[in-house]
Image (cartoon, rainbow, N blue to C red; front, side):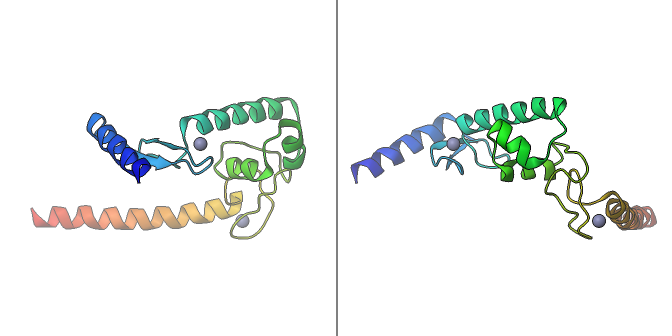
Amino acid sequence: MDDERDYLIRLKKYKESKNHTELRYCSRCGRVFPYSGAGEAICPQCQKKEQEDFDRVKAYLKDHHATENEVSEATGVPVDTLTKWAREGLLCFGEGLSGLRCELCGKPISFGRYCTECQIKLKKKGYMNSRFGSGKMRFAGRDDK
Ligand SMILES: [Zn+2]
Ligand SMILES: [Zn+2]
């Protein structure tokens, strides 16, 4: 009971001191930390660790042409994390070296979510849609005046 009250008092004080941040549990280690409201809920300690891991992987990839598994073994960073970074386009493994597959056609890719061909296809589609949408709106606006 007391613990909970303490926590609520601290939380209230914290909210009073910083209006726009909230306390969250870190999704990695479970620690409570002030969350800025942007991105994944990861505490500063875990963020720092991830940044260090990332720098290590980046440095390793500069000198080595290696698969995800080899990079994971050499740097101690889990393959899952490497795949996540590659998917987000933060890392670029050579063709076929990462475990990534195009989400549309299943072809091996080196980074991101889609292969070049599917990216072009998607871009064409998106471009046409957005052009159609904004063009129509602008047109309607002009008509009103
Ligand atoms: Zn954490
Ligand atoms: Zn594809």
